[in-house]
Length: 69
Image (cartoon, rainbow, N blue to C red):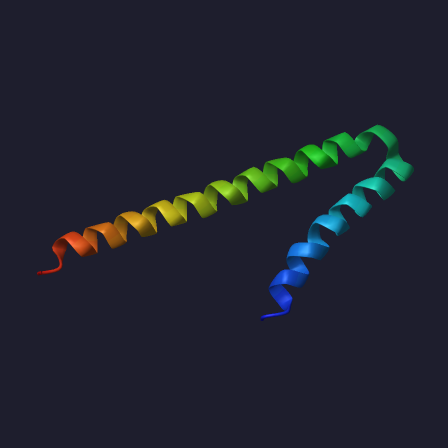
């Protein structure tokens, strides 16, 4: 896993850019729809991650308050 995560973090954006470029060559203006779709998915994933982090932080804060000194 030490190599997989950085590799995915680097290759995924490169693959998206290359895919959009090839889409531009093949379909022209439809690439804007694909870029919008990628953007919507990105925002959806980011909102899920932020919600999970917020709920986890609230749960940890609640546990700290309930713990006896």
